[in-house]
Every structure is written in structure tokens, then in C-alpha cells.
Image 1 (cartoon, rainbow, N blue to C red):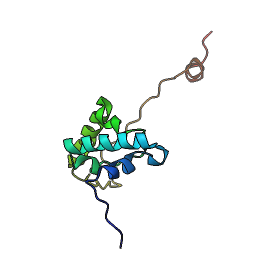
Image 2: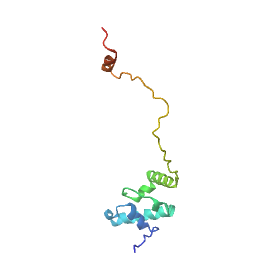
Image 3: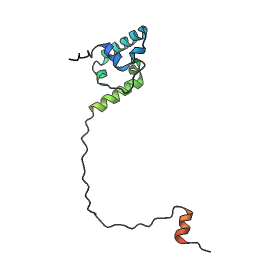
Image 4: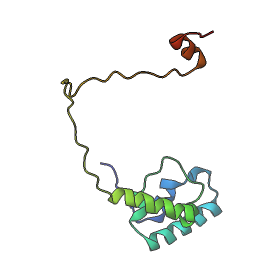
Length: 118
């Protein structure tokens, strides 16, 4: 049986978002401190977020770009769009066909269509 991760643990946040194998001991302590600060603000928000990339530091979430990202991500999660309707198109033709005259696009087309006048 798999052991369930403790999501309230700041170390879990660090391992989820940061490439922690590259961190030194001092950097690890800084990241855990930032994770504690993030968990004090909003304990459940950061566990819902999924990133396609790893961060250099959790301090990104404290920056304006990070706050904007979190706001947009959570508003997308809350957004309930109805599923799109499937419209079936029939092969039946409605209305009459129109024969449109195509205008010549180039000088060469114009000369071919209307001929040379001398």
C-alpha cells in the first residue's frame, strides 16, 4: 500500500515545486521557511496547483508574477463551463447557389480575362 503524502508538510511543497536535489543545506532551509510562510497564508491552495516545470525557488509564489499565476490558476479551477453542444450537419442544401464573379488579382490575370487592347 502506498504511503499518502502529508500535504500540510512544508517539505512536501519544496519537493513538489523545486528541484530539491540541486539545493544546498542553506537553500533547503530557506525553501522550507518560504513554504511555511505560504502554508500560513493559504494552506490548501498550493496543493491544487500543478506545474509543467520546476521552480528555482518557492519565492516565485511570493512575487507579483507568482501571485497572478495562482489567482488565474484557481479562477480556472472554479470556472464551470458547460460542455459544448454537438451540432449535426445535414447534407441537404438550403437556398440557391450563387455564382460570384472573381475579380482578377494581378495584372496578368486582368490581361488574360479582358484581353489586350491596342
